[in-house]
Structure formats: structure tokens, C-alpha cells
Amino acid sequence: MMTTRTTARRLAAVTGVCALAALLPATTAGARTAPPSGTERVSVTAEGAQADDGSSGAAISADGRYVAFDSDASDLVPGDTNGRSDVFVKDLRTGAVERVNVASDGTQANSWSSTPSLSADGRYVAFASDAANLVPGDTNADTDIFVHDRRTGRTESVTLDGRPPQGRQGNQMPVISANGRYVAFASSREDLVPGDTNGAQDIFVRDRRTGTVTRVSVSVTGGEQAAGPSASPVISYDGRKVGFISKASNLPPKSAQAARQEAEQRRPHSYPFFPHDLDTGRTSVASLSSAGEPVGAWNASLSPDGRYAIFSSQYGEVVPGHPTGRPDLFVRDLVKGTTEQMSRTHDGKQPLTGSSGLGVLSADNRRLYFQSSSPDLVPGDTNGAQDIFVRDLRTGTVERVSVATDGTQAQGYSSSASTDATGRLVAFDSDAADLVPGDTNGVTDVFVRRVGPQARGHGHSAALPIHLEGATMYQ
Image (tube, rainbow, N blue to C red; front, side, top):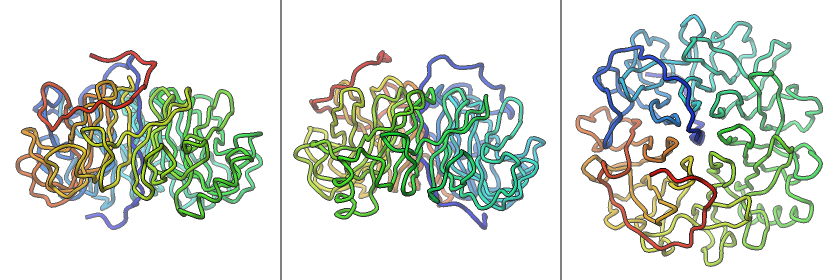
């Protein structure tokens, strides 16, 4: 059992590309030759034996073949003797399991690793680790960001560049672009870019091809550095747009700073969501009220094409008629400047209770997965627990997907959805013991479910005023 583990959990990186690189060969023989057709447990050995400790942080590749997760288990692969949380990748086609938080020579990490993010084809895995033996010269005794190439076996650091002194950096929350070139992360390091004098955690992007680092947590006007900490980076599939949450009061336009500061005073610990365009250098505010004022948000993400911002907020001003104090899920069209509430009941009404968040969109902007504790999004939700739902933005259908293959609801808590490019395959974490037969380990596991005609669930339609456009629909 693990002795030290980070509690940070990132949003599943949404990587939606349709042209994918060659698939990796299997490293371990498995029993499966086809992707799952219902609900299956991912955090098992290549032979199908259940893990001896908890697993979470599910992230699925855009091609739907690989699921990455971190786990305290010591029996998922042979030779796991470090007693720490590790990062694994499961091949859904072959059943093979691979530990990826290793040095280039295969040496296992000497401390914890977590929060994986996958490139579109599953070749590159970004993760955070406190280990000091994954690359040569790691002497800062702090968390760093790494990328492991599953094709070559090479592990590299994104945050170490050999410049002494390295100092305490607090690097965390990595997300990788679809092609594996760009990695966004949060860091308190002050020498990654010139002029970093704010003494706060910022959001950076490293171009792995050129080696350049760009700070993206800058103001809307003039690139002024943030006067406060920023966190929770997310990235579009091409790496052009990076979103983040920030406490800094100077990031919104000056005309909106007073409203933003007033909002923080009314509801502390909830801060606006800012997408940054690396091509233009422009930072914008995505979490806005119906009057155009910045509002607090959390659990934010970007659509794969960077057009839509998905965020949770308890502000009553986000859309007309939304009650203050209940966290709901919203999607903002960054092109049209419109915001719509997504966490509505199966008949289009406001939920009476519960909260919703952690939304992720498929590559065609059609299917929105999210977690919610609201019991009235679909009929028959009586488990009293948080579930995973999907809303079809073309038809308005709402379906609960954290269910067993036969549709039985989970008797436990489910969270952290991640979807492939088509939106037909979803991975998530759950501590429920009734999603698959033989789940007797008593810990959180990672599951995957195929959504569509082959899978049974609880689906219901509502005629909602949804107007997301601009993408080819998958059939």
C-alpha cells in the first residue's frame, strides 16, 4: 500500500483529432480483441485480476484504445515494489497494462506519480511526479512534470532544464496536446520565462519540439503578469488555446475588475476561467454573467477545437433564471459570446437539488459528459450518489452512464469523466462495487463504458435551446 500520494486531480484532457498515428504494439498478451460493448473495469491486470488498492484519474485517448490512470495498487504489473502511486496505461484492445512513470531504462519511480494526460494516439503520457530518479540531474526535491514516450520508452522532464539552483517549484496539473507537442502545466518557478516577478503560481506551456516556454496566465490587455495565483490548466487538441482559473484581480479588462472583485467577496474561493490564445497572445474571460461580468467558476475545460468553454458555477447571474448558490454546468460559445446551462433535468427544467461539474466535450462538440449529484436529471435516479451523465447537444437526450452493462445504477460515487474523440466511449472513476461482477476490492476503480446502441442506460430527451455549431457530426 502506498505511503505518500498527491490529492490533486486534473480535468481529463480532451484530445479530439481524427487523423491518428500508428497504434502501439501490445506489450502483454490479453484476452480481448475488441473494445468494450458495455461497462468494464479498466484498473485490472492484463489477466483481469482486480487491483489490490485504489485507482483514479481516468484519461482516455482520442482513438479510444488507451486509458491512463494512477493507482496505489502494487499488483497491476510485475515488479511494482516502490510502494508509491504509479501511472499506468491500459490497452482496451489487448488488455495489456503498462507502467509509464519510469526512467528511460525502465527503473521504477522512487516517489509518487499522478494526474496523467494522454496524446490522441496514446503514445505520449504527461504526468506529475515527486520522483527524483526519472531523469538525470533531478535534485530539486520537488514535484516535476514528465512526458513518457511509450513507443521509444524515453522519459523526459518538461520542467527541468539543468539550470541551478532549481529550488522549490510546485509543478503540477499537466495536460498534453493531441500530437504530444505542447504541455501546459502550473508552476511556482520564477525562472521559466523572463520577467516573472509576481511570486505566484502561473500557467505555462512548453513546446517540446522547440524547447520554448510561454507563460499564458497574463492579462487580457497588454500581457501584464497575473497579480495572484492561477491553476487548473486545460488545452485544446492543437495546443493553440490554454484555459485556466485565476485568482488574479488584474486579468479581466479594467472595466470588469470591480465586478470581479465584488463577486469574489460575495463567494470566495471561486474564480473566473480564462482561455488564452497562443497564436494571438490574447487572454479572454469565459465565465461571464448574462450581463457580461466575470463570475467565479471551477471544474473548467475547453472543447477540443477550443471554441467552447465548459465550466461550473453557482452564480445566479450566469444565465437568466438560474438560482444562486447551486453549482450547475454551463457551456459558453467563445465565438458567438453566448452561454447556456447544460445541467437540466430530462424534461428541460432546473434541477431541484445537487451540483454538476467537470464537463468534457467530444471532438464533434456533440456529446457533453459531466458529473452530477442531482437526482432528477433522469428518472429512476435513487442511489443518492454522484453519477456520470452525457447530454447529446443535438437531440437534447440526457443519459446516465455510470451504470452496469444491464443498466443497474451504481451504489457508489462516480466522477472524473473522460471521453474519446467520437464521444461514444467514456472512462470514469467510481467506488461502486456493482458496476461489474466480482468487484470485491473495496476501493475506487477506473471503468470504461461504450455509449450508444450497443449499451443499455437511462436515456431521456428534452427539447433544450442548444445551438452549438461548427463541427461535422459523427454518425
